[in-house]
Length: 264
Image (cartoon, rainbow, N blue to C red; front, side, top):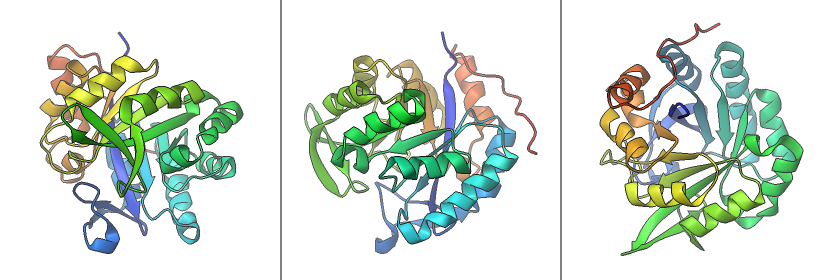
């Protein structure tokens, strides 16, 4: 069995890492600053994170230089793979982030609005480089819908169907974000995570709802996710990446070695 991954996530707004609940936004006062992205990246590098995800939640052209600078600094000092998303609308945008030091590119709303962007990115850079991030919310007893524009607009897509389509177009990984669980610390949405993991041939990263390391182990065991992404429990210092891996190992989940490479 392949090793499962522990992935901290940094939502970057105006050069700082922020946190909110259920996709709360800066314009509504729903976000709070939690630290410097480079300093946090170095912390997770030292803790043995398998990967690190950056989301540029400002995602505007005039702020693009900020996230590029952050990625360049982190890539220069850390050894873990970096995934970058937010406001990436073209293959040229992808190339900008890859040149800055990203290993993978995450697309969300732009993939829904222009599905051929998935195919174009996969052809240019390889499927292993293209991550499709899906923001989903339970809207009925047995229905999870996809939302775009940071969870603000229904996409009129069902989550499992869209995940399948994204993979057909060339996505090499799916990140499944639960809008209901985001920042609530009540646990991942196990049911939709399991359904997507069973429906697609690529790795699925569970996101939204981690309140402790047991939740992270649970989504890997029960929902068959390939990786567990978390933010708040790591940023606050409640738990470390090493503690998450130790919990997983104790439950028989294969994880990569706990010892991290030193920062440069």
